[in-house]
Length: 289
Length: 100
Image (cartoon, rainbow over all chains, first blue to last red; front, side, top):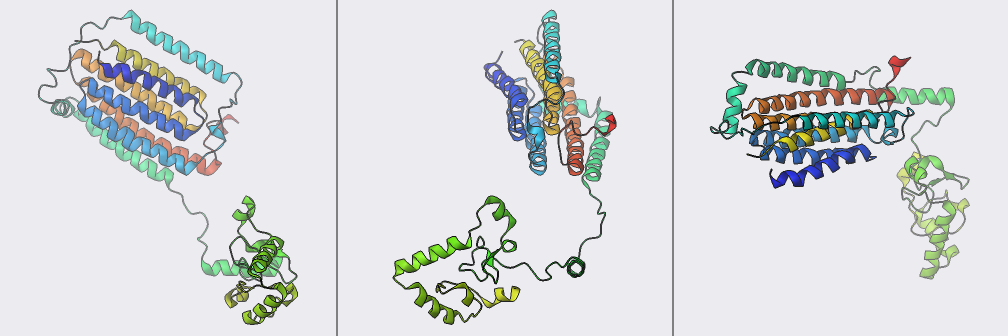
């Protein structure tokens, strides 16, 4: 018995047991990769070099990548949890598995395999040549049927993955018509959403635009930022601007009025006097309002 | 020549683990991985018996098992994708329409 077996067998059993217990499906896929690569090495030990290559190329190369792609598309959901839904099912399943394992091992202990013939003679002309001789003589019909199977599988996968469009594709014209219809029926705002930072002192994406009465417009910042709680509040913004101005030694009132005229915007006069030079209120954003 | 019995024992252990995994796990993709584990365990037994008997028929059978497994994975994962698209879940417990 080769030492490779005694090194790899515990690794394979531990990795296979890990598939049963890990929570995340991605970890299960990686543990399966460990099992498959170890199996490939065992094939090489068992004088099957062709299957060694096929195992690595087909299983770890193609099938596991397919698993990982589907995991990426499906994502994580509640089925990753290991809580059992049918009471007693897990215990029964483990008992059934143990019974099966004990039966298999008992059966193995009852038999004697006799002396190993070995593949030296069969592999004398090369393993791949020997396989090809059998594959294209005795198993040629099965080999041809395999091509039908592969074509059927490819067609089936394409049909299953294909999604028929049930509704017509929304064009720009139909979207515009829908928007006007919403305005007429529900009174929704007809124009585009306000850009962030309009009438405020920053135009960063996390700064909400200010409405004419000085309140922040929730529509102007991304919902993702609002969900993460990283949207800055208007009073906090005013505070850091005044702090910067104080550190620069400027008087907030005087600097503000100067900046007001230089910015040429009359709309923020009701916001008070503390308008800094850093204010960015470019005309394109005003147009959006 | 050395014995192939340890390989057969390892193969049956892996098959048992795969079987328990199919019965206990709820994520359809992990269930599928356990099916692959069982197929691989059978392949190991086939290759070991090929060595035991000194002819290559076992290796050809393992090769065919790999081909069938590849086709099965493609179709099975497409089915899982379709179920996920309609039900937003990859849990094997959620696809239970035939029960009612």
